[in-house]
Image: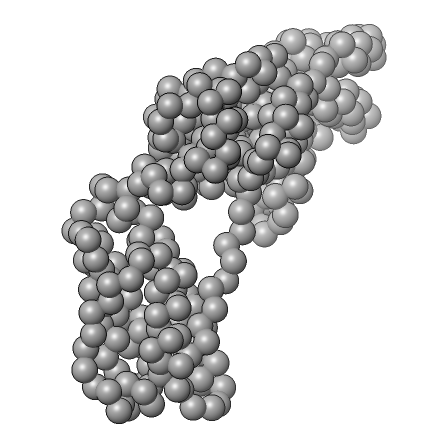
Length: 330
């Protein structure tokens, strides 16, 4: 498709925002004829942005005041072909120009870290971070198709301090692209903590593919919704000691607690946090009795079923996962 045909016809019988949304839907349906192409996938998302902006304009009209575009179209009841650029910004500009409206697009939240020559080394070569980088070009259809998926990947791992999902406009910053052997777009490279030379990402381009890759390489345990899985926080060596603790006599429990605390102190990286939780929960298990773990797991499950912040959800999920090992060992 070389152009998007968009009807901007409106009459005084209906609100102009409704007409704009209808015309946007027509554009979406036209684009859906070829949903596989990167150009159409990107256009689909951008049209949805404009639809949201039009909806906002309609709501403002309900609050009072005239609609300049409706008045314009009532005097000019013909249908025009839209032949401009296929993106939300261009569509909004066209509608505003032709109808005298002032539709504004809401800025979408972005979790992908934008790289430049000024911050590339500081972020990508940080030996405390595992970094996935997309080298892209603004005109690249496949890059546009990947963009919404890549943003979802960044959203999934936004709570992981040691994980960075980033991109670089390698068309604008060619020297950086050349330095890392970029010969086509998009090129994805993974820069783990222990290999800052970078390694090619050769996996699939679906959300689940990226999430599985990061989990495997980094040791995280996230699902495609960004939630921690039941494996998050589990440390095998400490699990073995938990089994001993649950089966031990009251006299033996304190000795095993000391072993848990010692093992936890030897953990490195992200597992240090988990070790501290094991020690704390093992102590509570001894002090509060054998039914503590079961009751607490049930309580945490109820809390997690409510609307809570992502940070709090992570904290409670880790606690619930570790306590579940106490229950399973009973």
